[in-house]
Image (cartoon, rainbow, N blue to C red; front, side, top):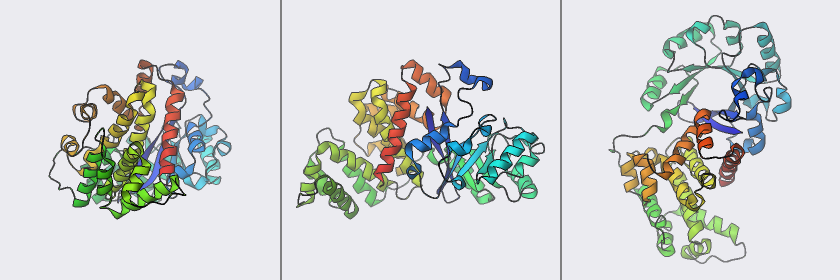
Length: 406
């Protein structure tokens, strides 16, 4: 199986929902999957299996989960597959579900069971034919790239005042700010929150400079534990976090100093703890999804390393994933942001020059998190990577992220 989570934000850039897209077959290896009539295991919904695998505790308690359903799976045993609270599930339809009596009856049945509904992929020409379905849904996702959603908003507010609108497929912060100022949208979805910065005019806050200095220290191939401990000692939050993790590892040992704690953790574990802890601190003034994306990319890249025959570079790939949005975090162009770090040539080649052996992993990460399953399938075929192994790597990544914040 393949699965990915795509965030939906409110106007304050707080994640309020995720769309959970899953797929059970490789497009390029199983031609049956391309035919709806022969769709493999068509009545089962892969996204529910993902929820069962990692648990809802992976996600914030207050978010809704948009689960795509097809014109076939909507008739499956959804109650039997869904073990999550129904009020957190939004069944996401598209235009394959037609405005016909059988579908409308099924929507009514599922709404009585406590599910919410959303619909996407509607063109302007579909608004009138879908009026009976639109009167029953909770959300309509409007594709900014396909229709003039500001005009569509006027129509929906007049005809369906109880329906919440989602401004979808937003490609830049400028578009987000424009629509936010315009108002009338419940959520915003798209790549806008992770678009690169092109001008390095922003000063980096002094506290962040301390974190960057620490990253430079530990990214040296043979860094000095004492030097790292002294930089950690400048930040109370990092000291407390370090002592907490060391106390969990050695309950009966008396910690006498920060240097002692760093030595007990060891060079390898200290480097890994620092990179994850500092990323969270650097993202403190950013949307939570930026921090989440950085950490998930880091761990997923590490998990993918042996699948792409790069097991020996797993630690470096962890850093590559972690720093893949450092331009967003520091609000500087990628080349300038990496100048402040101590990264390898391979990492710089991937993130700045878009080439080299690590760039392949970066492309895979980006295609995977966007749910571009055709591109993911192509890359798996080329490198002879098994779909089950990728799924295990992604589930392992989500579990690691969940445990990180326990």
